[in-house]
Image (cartoon, rainbow, N blue to C red; front, side, top):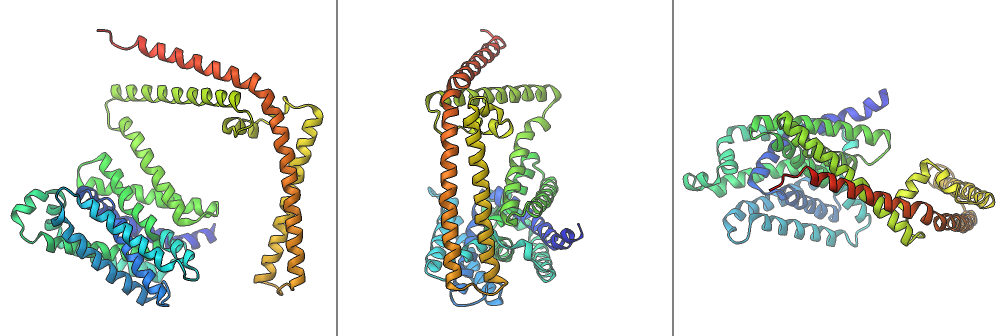
Length: 435
């Protein structure tokens, strides 16, 4: 437990800082209806980092950060004038073009570079788990300065975001304040991308603000909800990535997505009267029943029509209840299936053991000779071929079971689910108002 706290404390604190600044900026982004401006600026920043990478600078160096910042400021200039270019073409269109061109340029640069794929992966998902106290100090200091700047310029920024028509009439320097907004925004994005990657930065910016906007029109309440949900999602994502040994950035992104989906589903239940809430719950339960019976109907028909195809529902049932398959096999067929499964597991274990030996020798022990490597490779290929044979036996036994299950499970399941759907439809019509 102490190891986990030591490993996750700094990433958690940095996630809190990212949540704080990005939720506020995300409210502006959502209000301006420029959802992908973060991705565009993040990708421009990533392009700058890629240029620095191609010139030989380390990803975490001052030079790499400087290149990213310069590119981001150029992007801020373009985006600050894009409001003036809009008409029949929306500002979001220009933002999308900036993102696509920047991404394509970055891919072109690293296409022939050694470790180019690793560089792109680093840009996308970041390295939040490897952050240090120095990184935390830097982002706290920088984002505090940006926050203070936004506090003093809050009148202009809020007017541009929430009252654009009034700003156009009373403020003749819209492009200037837009430029300041995008530059400060770009500074935050540049620093965040270097730590968390493009995908996670986008989630920190959009999803907490979106959840807050779903539940309130007040800026303060939206901020509080966004900060709370961002903190919860970051905590859960870090915990899940540690327990299951998953990539931290990608895990947190998925948790953020699940949080947004859950918040959207719960909104009709939370922000309604008790009577409306009961109606919503009843409709939701009816939808779940309809969806469940539809899945059963499709699964039964698919098993009947094409028993040798993949059967996801039946595979799931057989995983937890092997008897669903075994009752359709003779004793000899079941013996062959068990033998093939055990043989495949044993061979897979042998392959993993050989791979582990080779990796250990390469990184920790004495390097293998050419003869040793050829011997290990030969054994691995032999075991892989044997494993394919065992898998062929398993597939043959499954096909035998499927040919029998189609009549005993497939057709009755399809008829049962169809009948349930018809009964549910009839019951729903009975409650509809009559003219």
